[in-house]
Length: 471
Ligand code: NAD
Image (cartoon, rainbow, N blue to C red; front, side, top):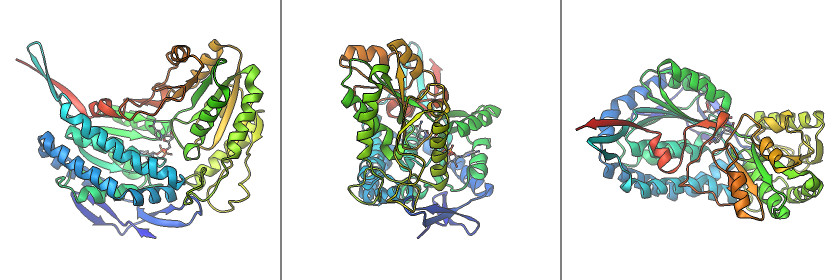
């Protein structure tokens, strides 16, 4: 078991002897690590360190920042195997996918900023004015458990690049990769105090971070419920904030689409990371006359997704990350049955082959009513709702008919048709006929899914204030 009994503050590992939080192996429920349930005092120390380091780091040269990010990139590549296995065990994502996504994306994102930075205009001339883009200050980063290192990197890398100093509070459910990151950064030439890590509960250390007057910005990824708390807290002293929150994304399959391809693409997307993905396509909208055929295709695709040990190379569906998440998803499956949706595959019982750990069967509901709770609320598990529609106008209305607006997909045999419908979706991104994920394109949500954008230049701009010198 890993005893990660410290916080990283002001360039030092500070031992912690108080209460700890157990970290569980998703596939067995065993305790695999313990991390500090730090108190407000540790968070205050970390904020003070970040504050003290700000002036010097904010004035550092771009070359120096790029140098540190190159060292970080090399460290992420070197420790990719360890990162993949750590997250596979904590979160439950199968090792093959965890290697490509959980360990691969952080290195890809870091590289994308290394490419972008040399040409980023940190100042520009507008008439008689010099417009300067200057670091926002001390940034509090608060992150969730589903892609634990990826979400941290999306904040830490552009914030460091902007010249900000950082206090990171990672998810207490999947915190171990944040320790690997701190260890990598500790071995770089990053000055002390620029990056700090404090582990603990949201209600204590998270609360201190979002309310502290010396924190200039909170960059948050997590649930809409916590995002709302952060927006309220930030309003009290006009902190800046960026929020990446939940989703209930629709896959709109138009009548002229290749149905088999569209259903397969939707199912694969929905079940990625056992449905624990904010952008998961969890509502599949199909023409009413193709509903039954679409359900048959989806059930066949899901049948190939038998749950198994995520450490095995052949596993495609792992467990959920925690007992709490498993129970929440099972409750939603029971709710779907109660609401009158047709249970086509899966169900609330634990899968036969997986007696231990936090497994849930891949579950398919047909004839789901668009206003039912399973079609409106984020379930965050391997559950797909098939919703029939009569015509395209109704499909668009249903797709836009939740409080969320993070992602979506449109499938059509005619690209122009697909793009036209994509342009009507009130979401931050839309995948058109299975288009590839692009780490240089902006990512974020409309409505209850978010405020602000991550990735590429948009992610960097979040951490910059604008000043204009009138000359
Ligand atoms: P969560 O909101 O419960 O927790 C996220 C973080 O907030 C954790 O570090 C937690 O400790 C902290 N926190 C909780 N209460 C707090 C408080 N009162 N003050 C300060 N911090 C507090 O979310 P989660 O369950 O860890 O993650 C799942 C959610 O994250 C889902 O809704 C998912 O859609 C969302 N998510 C969104 C994106 C995106 O980019 N839009 C990406 C991944 C996950």
